[in-house]
Length: 233
Length: 233
DNA sequence: GGTTGACATTTTGCATTCATTTTTTGAAAG
DNA sequence: CTTTCAAAAAATGAATGCAAAATGTCAACC
Image (cartoon, rainbow over all chains, first blue to last red; front, side, top):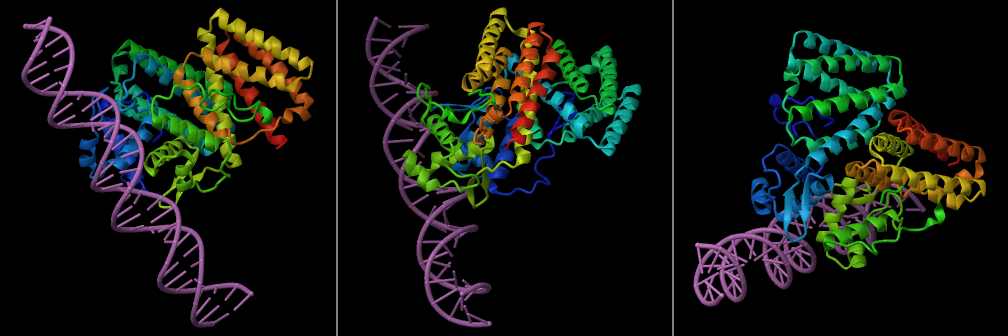
């Protein structure tokens, strides 16, 4: 679920799907399947969502499908036009900028909360992943680096110990997952080094449990990521 | 919509309902009506949501009602138990604490973003409301004070110029609106004075466009409100 | 050749219906 | 009098049906 929203590499492929997920109801399962279907880009941006075709695709009638569409619309993944059906929501550059900022704010909050309640064991785990990430950085192993980076942001959100925060964050992450970010950091070695230094600062602030400082660093860190992504877009 | 989540006074009564709202579709109207119905506390905490009764209440069949319920469940207002219907979601003290923190984080973000883009006119408006609030404070006019307080927080979120942030904030506010906070500040004059001083600091930081500083102040300000609310609960 | 307007087709939104599950009721047993 | 079990009643989840709206088609007209 909680997937750090940048640092995504194209080769990662689709998410593991609902393999080990204990689906409580059929509806829940359909919702997850449909969400993945859209998030994975099976429908073009701004395209009509064909009810009938999807009913056949998922072997269900229109009623549960339409219920699922309403939920996805509430999540912001699609939009419902009265009497004109559902369309895959098209994110304008402005929408994306907004989403990035809100997620940055939530990560900043996660860092602040993490400082209040993180255990020594949790910190040690983050520290270890950080060092692992550094080794990847030295070896110029982009894939390994990204993996660790994701893990660290993930661990910080988890360390915040706030399920509401995690869920809100995941919801926003789902909206922009359709937007594919190529690993453009590869072409910007300066940014990579800068990001690495920022991560050092993150770990340092976390070690000192300096909440507001970490909050600042994280927000700026994500802003820099956003700028880097935009610059190479 | 965007209602600052504390500083709510009981005598405010229900929201003006969907009077001047240009309902695009019937479904949208139903959703709003049903949400208000639940938010306004017509259903007991944790109570079953009676489909049949609501269908009669709103003069619709079960299909659109169930669609609306799915959306409300996604919003976190109710929860759907498989084969056991919908229940009004009961917020544990922990849930409320989490919600407060996330909203605090979002307000902190709003302050930071507002510093980046607020216009002089917008700042002047906030400043005026602040002075008005101060006069209410001096006169010990709790109602007027709260009104201004709400307006200020509202204006800061608006000044952030981020619709995604505003929508996310409003969504969380809706979840917590069922929980009634009495104006317990009335019994804690010290907290009132402290809050007023915090608001002075907020205005000062905003005037200096000191984003990260304002972010800090706002988060702490909301944390203090939360603590005050808990202490007198 | 391009535009307009009427007709057919498709699609949407909602109501109704049906099968399955849950909850309630009531009676019998301990 | 309480507990247990079974049948009745109600509610839920999903499929189908139907009216209204939108979309597409095609021929008449400018």
